Length: 489
Ligand SMILES: [Zn+2]
Image 1 (cartoon, rainbow, N blue to C red):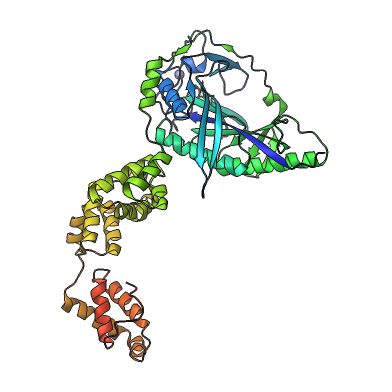
Image 2 (tube, protein in one colour):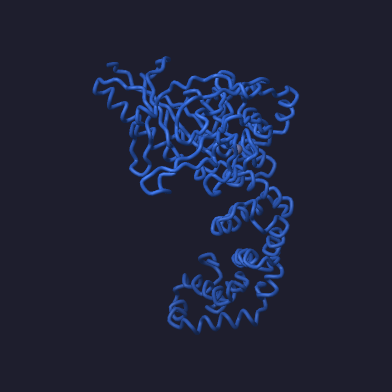
């Protein structure tokens, strides 16, 4: 055995469901969650004589995806039949692309936290139709099949084996998902199967150029699953090598529930697909002029947008990263900046109260009912001191509950900040009376209790008291102590 250290060599195959309303070769709906076998027709059921017709929208989305990943898009590509037998494949073959894929030779890079990047070459990107789905829990003691998904348009993105670490594979996939969401070609919903990953991995002595026998991992339904399964498989291959045994080429299934890998039955693993061009489908032709048009329509991607936010709005790196986490959030942030004026004030509101409400209510930012102008009105009330920041958060909450504007909430619920000194003095006195023991200790020199009293007055006023004024009054009540610890209000 060589004494040289081993490195792992990882490649990925990512299946992405394209965001079309209709299937790839028929007019059935692609909607998720319908009753089993309700979105089917003679074409996707593979009935004799039914002819497929290519969905042009799917081709355009696939070309967009290819261009965004720096791939060369081929003006002519060819659909082929991939033949295999499985219960969820009624035609007995899957329409895919084999010898002549839509696109090749791309690259996609993801920034590492703390500098550097994970850069991976894209070997190819091709279009294909999805298969159906076996349902093991629907009928007691039997497996049922749902063909709604049969014929749904996918692209398969195949990388070169450029990844070395399972954690990098995860980072790459997270970056790719965000990229595809920005591109708006897929909803990338992993729970609904819109983004699925297979991985292959082998080990070799560091510095060696040739590849060793690899194994393939399937059923990786989460990004953490990808990382865990790869880590487990690398350990297994290392163990085999240490024991002087050979790694067999095989397909392995990841069992997320048990966190273990098991081999697929060999019957399921037959690789003799006998590909041949589909005689029912003409070659896919995409005009060069259309390719260039689609290239010019590509959106600004997360890295570029983040950089622009740092330069154009003078945002801290951290803020720029948070508000560009999704395209919807970045769009919203830019609208808020337009309405509010100050980018840092805008990012504080978007990163804080807005995202908190979005998360707590389980909303997507695109469905967030408080638009940029409505939020700007609220921010204005806080900035000019009509309400405190704390009350501002509460007002946002009530705007969402009731659909009212910020100023209406403040007016109808009497939330405007109170600066009137007789009202404030009343509250201060009430709080001092309610806490005689603490008041005595404070008079006796325990001045750190001033913060406690300011806090109590703010609470007593339901956040409406002007904290600066309260602070001054509490200090005055204890003999004009104006130095010492800063206010906790
Ligand atoms: Zn159909």
